[in-house]
Image (cartoon, rainbow over all chains, first blue to last red; front, top):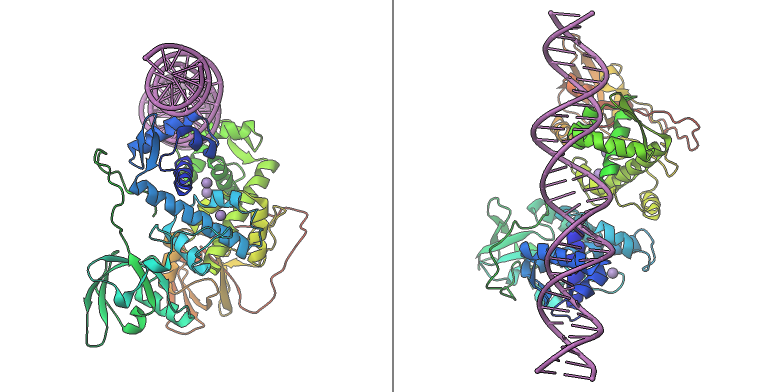
Length: 239
Length: 239
DNA sequence: TTCAATTTTTAGTCTTGTCTAATAATTAAA
DNA sequence: TTTAATTATTAGACAAGACTAAAAATTGAA
Ligand SMILES: [Mn+2]
Ligand SMILES: [Mn+2]
Ligand SMILES: [Mn+2]
Ligand SMILES: [Mn+2]
């Protein structure tokens, strides 16, 4: 919980343009003393969620960025729910979302996302990260029918929101956030075969499906490389 | 958070008929050691949320009962939301609700309640406390093990909300609202045979099942609602 | 370049909640 | 009514996260 709030605060500061986040500024954001913040940064560094150069500042690692984006996603989705369905005003929701964001269930988050209609913006007009941990951008997504083979893809949207189609997706085991890799494309009729990252047998999808599904690359190229960080922790949370 | 889980666990045990709750039994419910539980009980006693007589057991005070009922209210409202609006199955929601229940905002709770249409029962058929901290309705219900033969019955709740039991019900083709008629009762082992109104073959049910299912006569009498109960009856049931 | 102001980290405590091991009280058996 | 088994509490530690006060590093002004 505390760890999550710190990560999100660092993300906010990055989004505001700060490459390096100072201890004091971060302390201000999380309402803690610089001393407490310093201790937390050491811990986050040990877990490889931030790169902390003492006295110099801190920056999210790729993994830390991923985690922070997921918290931001939950925060903004809940804000949508509170405003659009419970009738809160946009200035009343932040504090409550600040709590709800810490309920960490991938399934819950994705279903809430679907329930809300896959919103791209929260009630404050801020972009909502998608299930792949990146902001939803029209440019970044591709129809499954035109996606490349061999790369892990993640389903980021549907072209057709009719109930009949969504129910059919359910039968196929596909929902927003489903990860799959395109294995084969049959030129004859445009059908494709995919394998789900979660396992199971190869699945054939008809063009009626592949032309109605938005996908994106599941694992973007690493943007930042930290040569001297020691290896890997347990991937974070999320049942 | 921890404090809330202890209070709710004590409430559950009260609802199961235990006047005094023992340290060991409570420890089992909250998945902690008796030593930790003992320490927590001292603290809860200091805050006057329980009456703790060392070596004798513990009981919620009026204030503690009020707080616990409010947590139970949030838990069950969220379960309704997860099932009715996010499409979860009734055996998937408990763990998530276990987290959501701790988001403590009166405004949020009451708006959620309204959004859901002021439900009286959660997806497992358990009564939902109202904003006044008392149950809203008492449905006329009987254990299937004690129900009369030959009448059409409808499943209105489960005594045991554990996922394992709910999944077993799924295998048996039973869910909330399932209609059946008790055909035979075998005195030897307490097993019964029922037929489903929807059709299919007669189904044998073991006492482990029949003593955990609340049923009501299928004839559509309206649920009796007592908006302003003076006495806090102790509605039975649940995990 | 030097030194004082500012920023950051460290040292030492506290609180909450957890654990294991040891002790004490209660209950059940002989 | 003793004793043995069970149950409950206390003692002592630990981890997370927070604080204040003190020390160390960096920065900026003279
Ligand atoms: Mn938060
Ligand atoms: Mn917002
Ligand atoms: Mn809980
Ligand atoms: Mn329930």
